[in-house]
Image (cartoon, rainbow, N blue to C red; front, top):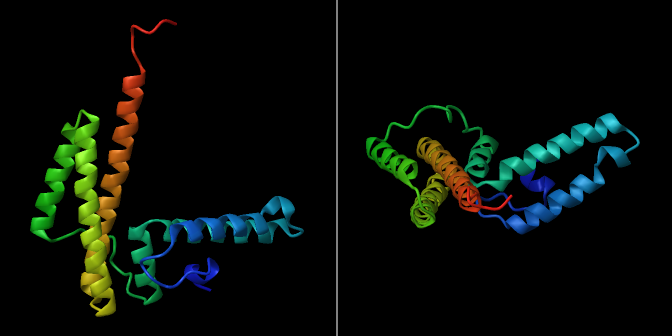
Length: 171
């Protein structure tokens, strides 16, 4: 059974994330080790559900999983060789390193979202055309931008923490 079947979802890059989460919670409740007679089996099933949820919850891992279903997921860990992309990626990383205000991070987040949206469109075309080499390259790029997005969110949290902390606060 594929991860998509497990959560009663269509085998596609675009899925309803609310349905994914609702079905995940329902399955976790159903196979919770504390409620099962066979705790070992329930633990295994619960672990499988968690792994499936993790694979489908982000667009980059969902795209990689779609490739895995077609047995086209090899060499996804290779580096990206697109020089223009690498230049843009370096610029975005530098902007993130230099960002010191929420509006800078928000602007960067919008730019990264635009990149992700473009790569999603590209993946859909590559996947439907069965252009596996291009689809794998697109997954690598999606993974890069997913990591950047995670780093932006960490930077936002860090800025919020810094704003909340003031040495002049009364203790």
